[in-house]
Amino acid sequence: MTKYYNEQVETASRDQMFYIQSLALTRKIKQVYDNVPLYRQRMDEAGIEPGDIRSVEDLGKLPFTHKQDLRDTYPYGMFAVPMDEVVRIHASSGTTGRPTVVGYTKRDIELWSECTARALVAAGTERNDYIHVSYGYGLFTGGLGLHYAGELIGATVIPASAGNTARQIQILRDFGSSILCCTPSYALYIADTLRDQGIAPEELNLKAGIFGAEPWTDNMRREIESRLHIKAYDIYGLSEICGPGVSFDCECQNGLHVNEDHFIIEIVDPETGNPLSDGQYGEVVFSCVTKEALPLIRYNTHDISAITRERCACGRTLTRMHKIAGRTDDMIIIRGVNVFPSQIESVLLSIGEVDPHYLIIVDRINNRDMLEIQVEVSQSMFSDSVAELERLEAKIKAAVDSVLGLSAKITLVEPFTIPRSEGKAKRVIDKRKDK
Ligand code: DLL
Image 1 (spheres, rainbow, N blue to C red):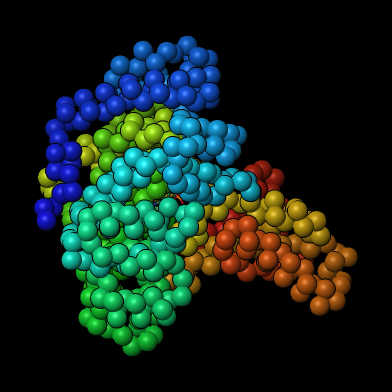
Image 2 (image 1 turned 90 degrees about the vertical axis):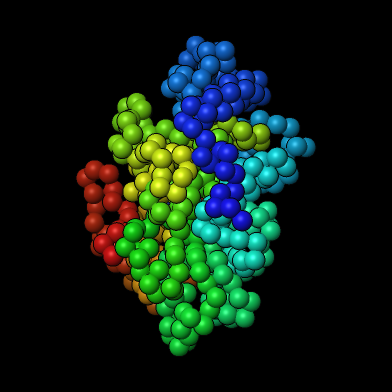
């Protein structure tokens, strides 16, 4: 197999890419203007007609879109095709209880699979590989995203899904998994469990890992590589754009190549929204120029990165993103699951027995993300029996776990122990940043 999945596109000249993107963009703008009321309204308000967008250079004339727009039009209001053309739905957390719902036509699934297949091939995957997918299967895009890509290149896919580490290790060992796909923190957790079980990395057949869905550093990359004896590749994406496969590492591990024939990337100043030059860090914005069901235009991801358009030593000419440096909103990612403090707050308020004074503490213990929520109880509640407090703790835990889809530790604390703030409340202490 070649080192590219689609050599023509992945090594196109910058001029060719500009032409491919501009052609697709002008068509897409017409489609969204005709089919999505929100775009028509925004463009009308800005005094822009589809004909005003003639090339990528005109992109800046268009308004941005945000997660809030998906929330306001929940669940299907931004879809650009009739529902009978939609063959798949995925979803991720929104800023409130409502998830962000995304849809795909048959063609969208094919395009997405190709994008992710490019990532697999760039990581050296071949037809005779065993792709062990430990991203969650379900509404999360990780599991099925990697799964379809693996099948597309003709490799053998093992849909292990997330959780049950002992079983994962048995499968890794017995089935001969050669490519591991999961979050980087889970890869380290697997490494710890292998060590605890006295299994040496050489006893496995692993050669590479494709890790994403949460931020990770180059130090963590080196740690995973040395502990599992594999090469660790980054993969980036978000459900709103398609899922995993928006951009990907190649063997040079020197920036993530954006699948630019499908997603046009811009970096903008978080304050002004003005485009920034190559090399400058800002918010990552994508425009989907080929997607049919949900072609988001100028979607602000709130992820922070910078880009370079220089040809990579691997031969690819696709624009590269630096590793994600953080986010400009308050979303936190715990074991690959997106969590907003506002979700936790609304659960606490819905319970009614506690005051909305809480602190979210995220830590990484033994390479496993841990979520603790400290909740203040009122004076009268605090003088109740231990059994009563335990009942309340269990009730909060059940509600939080079911809304977030994650297990959280709930700690009830005495009245007035959570610091009050005079400005913006500091709700989150993320201890992972110092590790
Ligand atoms: O996390 C899609 C995905 C699945 C990507 C599997 C890679 C592998 P969402 O749940 O919608 O989609 O979360 C998207 O996760 O805006 C980033 O903040 C973060 N994120 C995803 N990949 C990376 C990465 C999936 N490689 C949000 N590095 C994005 C840093 C990442 N952050």
